[in-house]
Image (cartoon, rainbow, N blue to C red; front, top):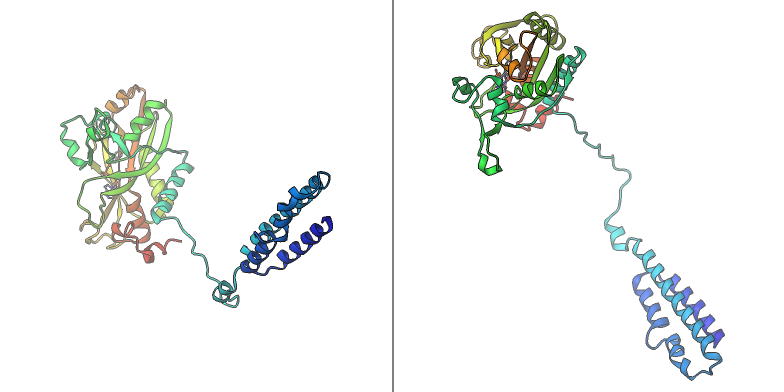
Length: 347
Ligand code: FA5
């Protein structure tokens, strides 16, 4: 019987390994392990063997059974990893076809221009810092010298957040400019300060060729002893010349922002009409790119700085307007229009 078991093991392993598909393997399994298999009969007959023979033959028969089962499992796994003839027939790979070039993603033109602008300021010694889009009324208005009910609040059409909906007890909003970061930075640092803050801003206003309701700004802030308006002008001149070249015309005009004194806005000659006046520049010949000024003494006092000792300048510029002027784009809505033909022009 021992010899018979050895022969059975050899025959079974041979037949299992020869099985070319799942059906053949199943037939081999039934033949060697099924109810009518010889091995099953031997295992059933163990009780009829003598006490000396029973443990020896029993052990061997179980070893043969385990070897056959292991061989079936291995062969099944191996067959499953080979695709069937059907799959091979329909799934052919034609290696003579030209390959498909993977499309590479690229940075959005606004991201590119924002990085470029920040880099110009970094080279002038400014650090880059970011802040929250959802802001307290305190930082967006109050601490910037714009108390509640101050008419200057009308300069920014604000998206307010219902305090009850987010379980807070003080008014919150989507920041209308990046200027709140002036306060956050001054609260946490002592002068000298030189920072730029890129970020998204939101205003509830009519969208047109130069206005979006969601747009970006880059805030600049420099505070130290003896900072003057000449430093503000020099810094902004350098920035414009680095980005646009030396021939571009710049115009400063008086403007009012409650958190600076004096306040200005800065424009660049309109690339489209070359100063003659057109729809884009609202017939003025100039495109405003930033507001700026000397940090108001009230703002310095509120963050605990002595305005008799420290002075500073701040500016807030619109990178989309800068990109429009640099690349000759006559409508701000192209940036978020998701037209690939537009986006692909900025490699
Ligand atoms: C401000 O937001 C001030 N916080 C700027 C400032 C900072 C003044 C520091 C003084 C000191 P203003 O609303 O003008 O100012 O916006 C500044 C720039 O943001 C504009 O010149 C323009 O380039 C851009 N901007 C403003 N509103 C929009 C808009 N709706 N869509 C696109 N760009 C805009």
